[in-house]
Length: 89
Image 1 (cartoon, helix red, strand yellow):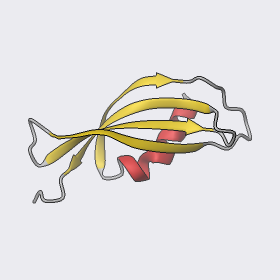
Image 2 (image 1 turned 90 degrees about the vertical axis):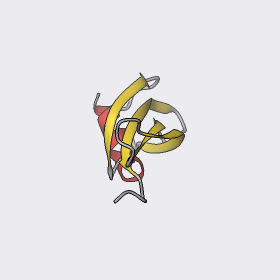
Image 3 (image 1 turned 60 degrees about the horizontal axis):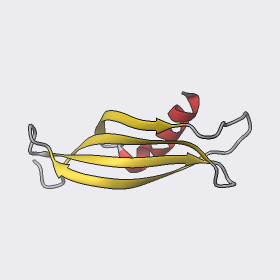
């Protein structure tokens, strides 16, 4: 869980800084992280749609991967975020 928390924290600035995280799914932890390891993260937008209940917001599904310098994946997951649309007032 600590690895997940670190990678979510690393990715907040690019993914959900101005939004509300609605959920986290499909988490996998294929390789361990040890004290002293460096961890990086990368995120990719999978889908974007308008919110049905709140038209001024959009729902974004994002895939995030935390990995070590050798490229080994430490954790991967999908998050769903609700973000205010730019043209909303």
